[in-house]
Length: 195
Image (cartoon, rainbow, N blue to C red; front, side, top):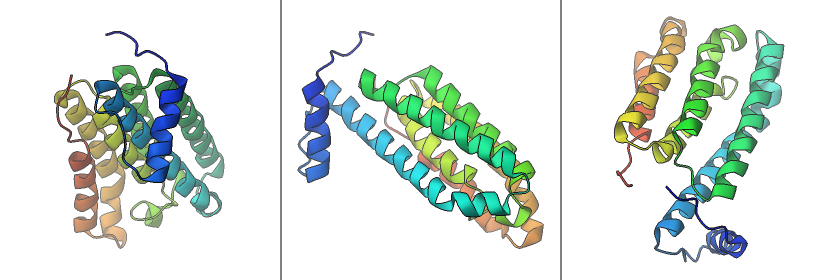
């Protein structure tokens, strides 16, 4: 695959079209890739903003604030690195990035029992890892080269979520909430195949 030609003006046109709501994006492959990049960057920035808004409460209620801080910092640094990389390349389709992102999402989920109190793991931003994992599934669906890779990513994240969330069913969370949230990961990874 060849690296897309860099056209600094093209990025500005795309962001201006998005900001103004005109919807004028090129209908070429490069335009489609740029639309995906804009979507992924906007979704990740939104997720980081929500995490930042809940940060004080998350650290205050955390059972291990140092671990919550370290994971939050890793997520922010990795997200910035990923966003800069995809904006410069003008595309996100990368097995390497999907693997890094999925690993980060699974790790944040599996470590939740060590930094998020039991009653905050489902349905709160004190336990921010599930919200981040949804974002990773959506962007990963774009980044995966095949539907099989996207399904594998969603299964890994779903399994990690179930592992930490099922114990909450005995502590005020309903099984339906846990199953419904798990379905979010499997549904959000679907995408049309494109080459």
